[in-house]
Figure 1 (cartoon, helix red, strand yellow):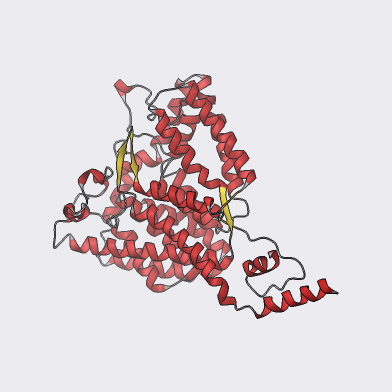
Figure 2: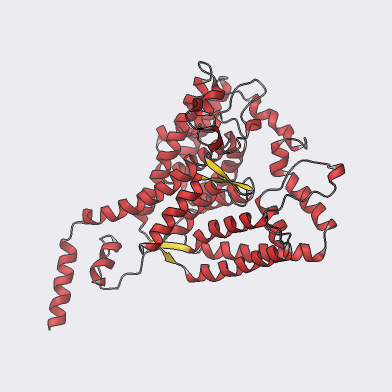
Length: 432
């Protein structure tokens, strides 16, 4: 009788507990997610030289956040992911030892550090996950507004000095900026949102923002500003992301059709009126044939390099790789037929071999099980990281962690527990 009465009191207290009392917990966890995303987006241009590489501040602060969260017991290790990750580390270590050079140690350490974040998770609710998406959208809105202001300001002030913050930040704190991607043929400076590494990054981030807005929120003012940010970057990579992911959005959410129509009409209107120069996009189709352009280097060169690689190297190199951090494969340095260092998927094979790449794919698949991330967004992030990105691209990896692996499902409720209240409240009440 005593246990029954205690159970009744517990349930009465549960029903009488205000739902708003659980919001501070949600807000704290959401703020952690937004802080991770903010560091990945706004600090990617700043850092210090570190051995044979340039260590950006975003990775430093992100590592500190994860260490603090794990040390305070807010994050948990998913053991199935951990087992696959240990196999990945074994494959990477074997490749390192078989091809050992001291310069590889930095790349090896960064690889292990960044991908160890995928093993961490925490229970979260759908409400909290959507708050995280809203926080990301606000960050992308800020970058898009900066991109618009940056593009207009170049006609009044020196746009080159604006990109370098007019000397406010010491020069040695800047990561190498992709200047070749900033200046167009007409000397117009393409928008990079000031804080992003290059205009193509602005295009990709804006594309992700448009996709999330279409899938989840469908706010016209956000769609208009993000579309402007996408177009003023004058880069085709974000557009290719949308061409791949938006058709999937149609399949999973019929409500996405109207926002996509609004975005398309708005973009076409800007192009038709000449506010956005269409030729800046159409002229880039020729890059797929020019071996010295970024378009060729991103989309064509990796396949040429893979074909040359498999026909020139030994079986041991194909199976076990050439060690982390090596330069892209060059079949004949004296007679280079094309330009490119390979993108993420080719570098994965080049560094760790077919065996290591297969184990890594298995690790990634285990990380995405039961993910809250919408499938179109997951496809866009994979494309962002492995087709047009690099193997240790902090911004893409952190977005993948926050959206796909960090926010795990909540513990299951007992059958006798009410379902109309946030499940984290139920878990906390019954756990005590």
